[in-house]
Length: 480
Picture 1 (cartoon, rainbow, N blue to C red):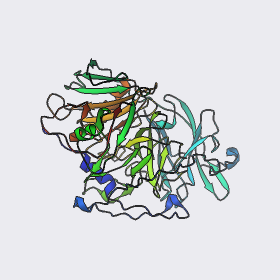
Picture 2: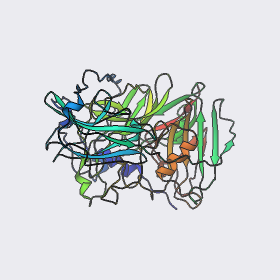
Picture 3: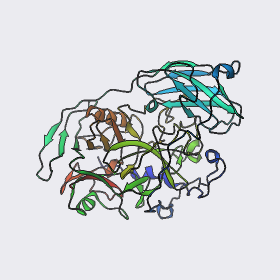
Picture 4: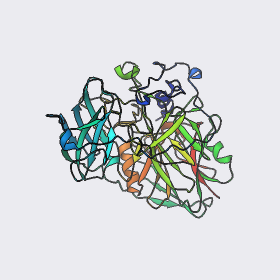
């Protein structure tokens, strides 16, 4: 079956937006952002991604000066203020509560601890926009320990006073376990010490399947990301450097421009802009723009790998330990900042690429295919607002991913898809396979017709339906 490209549709998540204003306003979490409500039908008119090669200044992750003071919760509980509903899922806490209508983002949210009687001095995340005061808030499992029991309270700040709701106690579930396949090591003369290559033809969910992964010890070789001017094939990009040993396609793109963010030698290219609630033009959420964070994988100057979440604001890129937990049709957040909806983390990637969603964070799968009460494509845990051609249990296709193990090794993965010998994977199957390979962090990259791996001059993966596509970003292993 001919492969279907997914990278072009995915770019519309980002291409519909004009750049955010350069001058800060008094309340950045509520600042209006000018956007074009409809994407251009002409690719040449799509706004170009930023390619400013200047190094990014670090963003302070110390929230101490901006963390609101907490009051004695026993004295501040409004009579009858409690959660309307509260439940735990396999990968999140789902809570509803009320605040006064019109409260601004960054003045209310949820706090928690393991001991009881939580305050803002423990841990917290701000809530989505207040609107009519009915708040639907989902807390991702990246903030918690699987199977852990937590005491949670809603909070709101009124003047100099912080008010707390009555507490609820919930136990977080467990995300799906690993999927173990039989892998065979492949020998290639081009591979130096420190890089190994494996393949499998083990069936997945009763379907035939073919996949490969390369794994590298970063004490012996380097992990790098490329973001050349314009699109080119992985063959061309791998041949551009004689030290390139293994290379895969990278993040999303459109019309030869990065649809997201990349770091090359510490310099950033592109940005993470707002996203449409849906890419289906007939959908009510087609004209709804959401602030989002996207998954990003990379290494710092010491070669330490990690997957995190990133958003762009005022030409700066902010990194977080959890996604902005948007829920299509339910939870719409204000603009991100250094303290909203969570304080930023200290991370300075040397080489990195964004795409999404994050498949694993600290060994946990942070998404699910659970629907909200609206059903259809209204997903409870699709925080990165991945579109219908990427996210969902029935979206089975070629996949590319990158991950890291607890010992610091980095893994590059591809699988064939949309052919009879290997229909491919959905995102949950991909996450479980990477979990079975020992990854603690992992990120889904662009897939479909973009998927491919170069090992030396050899193209790994099926090319019967489509020759190698020109892509914008790539990630790979390089000899030192």
